[in-house]
Image (cartoon, rainbow, N blue to C red; front, side, top):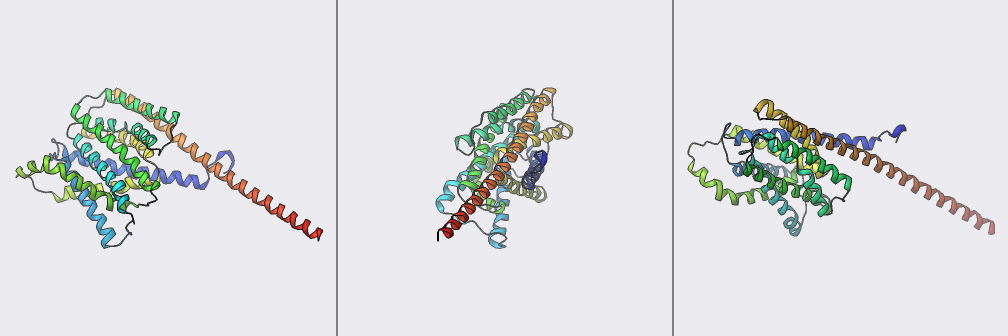
Length: 349
């Protein structure tokens, strides 16, 4: 580490990679959200079938992942036991299907801007679940930071012009399921000793999502679709939408695997701000001064989190160097001691 506390190449590389992963995820998430809103909204494409849309995404992701893994052999499948699959992959698939179902359903009832405000409550949920599952250590300052972000979002949500209680319940349920899923992904990738790349992640998880979603689809949406004779499957719309969803799924697993679930959700506040600006300027959603004030508070929390993360990286790098110096010093002392002992033995002889 150079003068003035400059960052080493290793830390700088980690920072650049982290922000690159975040930027890719924000772009793809932005695209999928706006695209899904366009398809589901009754005033736009007018296809209000969130379970069907999610199943199309999962079927597309499953098919592509299967081709890449089993047919083209681009990547090798992960060796895992039946027990690990049932206890780790299947629960993640269940939580993911529920999160996507409820989240997509909310777009029928709520504006894009208000949904993003509710989604930004997730950092506290992710951190709390991480502490309960012993993935995150409890720190008072971190929890205070998460609460400050949520407090800002709550103020922003207070100024919502179009409020629908059912839509809010759907979105809050999606937040709870998503927060649990994100923590479990990190546990599966790290604690179980299994290394998933983005393709193998979809290879194992997407079929589970499709299977779980098929149950409510048969009960809720299939009868409606069967009775709707005017619908014709638009391959361009649903094909490009599914392709965006596939790319987003890769970005999600990549971001969580390389950083953390908490990082992804705090970065999500940035994405939410961009979406709110887009929904206000393009979709013409109502955004009030109270909304903007609340998000200003949330961004202060994000800035503090990024600062704390940077300081932690610098401290970890310094500790690693200090440990290396101590080890080298200890080894040098041992060598000198051994050399003195050898000389003493020679003089005794």
